[in-house]
Length: 409
Ligand code: HEM
Image 1 (cartoon, protein in one colour):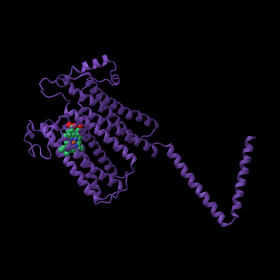
Image 2 (tube, protein in one colour):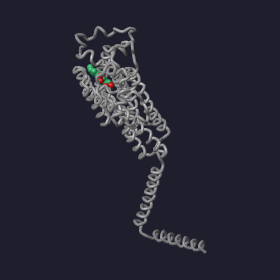
Image 3 (cartoon, protein in one colour):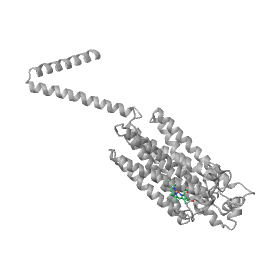
């Protein structure tokens, strides 16, 4: 009975519709035209709605890319915080105050007087206290301890900021196949970075009976730790920017390809200069010649190749390390100026032009900061600003590369 009622209703409905169409056929041509237009617009609107609905339900889409892109930019911001904090920890000579490493247990700093004294007496067993800080008081120890503890806690925060959202976005299906590989790589890098940090600290805790030098971490491990932090930063920033900035439709001319190659080479040179800066910092090589542009009275100092074999000078002789950093710094500045002049005569999108101009301005600021750090015998605030300047310079180089990148096929 219910079925026959349904059948009747449908049948009536169809009859009414057919009548409506028949009646509309008898109407004026204007009315008929209006009806046709209205039905067409309804079809288009329905099609748009269904495309939007499909986009909203199928991930990854533009909205999820926006979220992932912003998350990666946030992560790279946290890495910058870790780099700056790490630099200040080193410059205040606080990095060797925590003499062991526990992932969870060390998150709680000492509270009571007894706990502080126990921590201090552990530190007193190590070369930095015995050789350099034998007259250190407990309040002074608390300061260097909190500096290193803050850096380590920040490191944990960075780790969580990468790993937890990765798990969440993965489950929500926000990642494409290639993006899955990239975020896994980034998460692996964060863990590696933490382990490298402890490997670096360990080198400063070892007794070296044959050495008369003040206890410090190995300059090789310091530059590996800083270099891998910079790599993590650049990779996160690049991945985030390519999700957020739509590529420009550039005409693939020979000149554009040259500019792109030039920009890539310049970015690489800036990265190398920053790495060589870590060697300067690791060997306190900023204190050997504090004049510019000459080193003392000479353009090329006498002790440039004092160590044997010759290659050892590049990584272990403070004079050579400072000399190389100057040369690399000035070469980066020259390359960036060249890039600016080369790009000026080209028709490029506004955003690319702005990025290249900012990169050039930052390069001059960075060299001015480096020279001032040298002339003023490496004051903490200036040296930390110079270190942060290198991150700003790298960021702008990445931005330029993102603006000049090819349209995906
Ligand atoms: C593109 C140019 C440059 C870049 C990217 C750069 C980058 C860096 C970096 C990353 C450090 C390590 C900082 C740390 O770990 O604390 C450093 C240290 C240093 N740089 Fe540069 N630098 C540049 C140019 C220069 C120039 C031209 C000079 C001087 C002539 C200079 C002088 C120094 C000094 C003295 C240090 C040691 C500071 C310390 O002990 O903390 N830099 N640089």
